[in-house]
Length: 223
Image 1 (tube, one colour):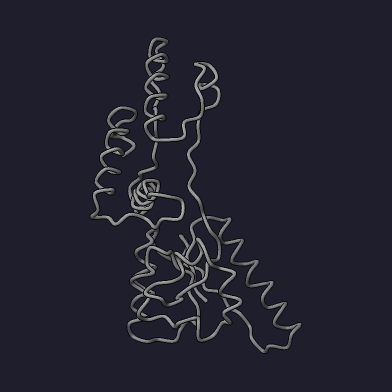
Image 2: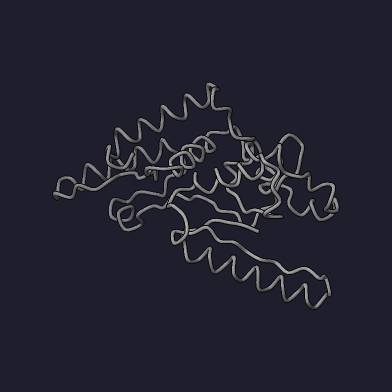
């Protein structure tokens, strides 16, 4: 199995999974030993694309160097044609445990191509101290946040505090696309609705709102 990480927490997780599986395999006499190849800053470039390119090349060439790979869901569409359908190997009862958010990232073209090792959720933090200071409530919509943040920025500016009203996490690299899609996801019609199509009118409205937040509450250094 192969995976990539530049965070110690993920490296520890991979090591734990390997250790626990091998203990289980020995106990159950499975005659399987899991070996994990870690792509990290010590042995590869600090670039997700380098790992993606290496794995994609192996898949294209039908190499059997790794039985399993840990990959970012961003690459599901690219990898899908080269991955087995887990429906052929895992029972329906087991796969049903992953219905919901896991299914959205593990299924492509009605084909189970992966199961999540973990799920990450983006959240919007509010500065409670500033909200209390100006008797504001935690915003529940982007328009509410825009109004609340503009009020706080205006008042803080009077004291010479040049603070940022909104940081949507748009750094250089792939995380920017993750943040953009997370923002677009917040514009779906309901909690059960899928993410709007990138070419839809909804997407246009979402990114116009994002640009408004950037213009009114932030600066070019964070985008």
